[in-house]
Image (tube, rainbow, N blue to C red; front, side):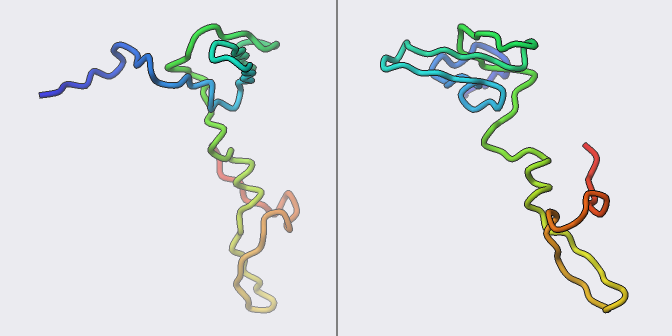
Length: 104
């Protein structure tokens, strides 16, 4: 029987979270060990990370859209009582006050 312990020993073959983090700047050189990683969430200026990160409380996956980006591409269902129409409108075609924003 195989037992998985969460939060145990880190997998040394796993890539660092910084590779896909929105707040990280990753600079790579021609060799495998030529890499500089700086995190914009650690302080007012970017701080250098010298080891592979396995867990981070401020991790934000850059591969997933942020709430603001999803609001920009969203279609909003509107009803027009004067013309008795129902239809979708792009959020960017509405005024800022007409947009409905979900709370976090």
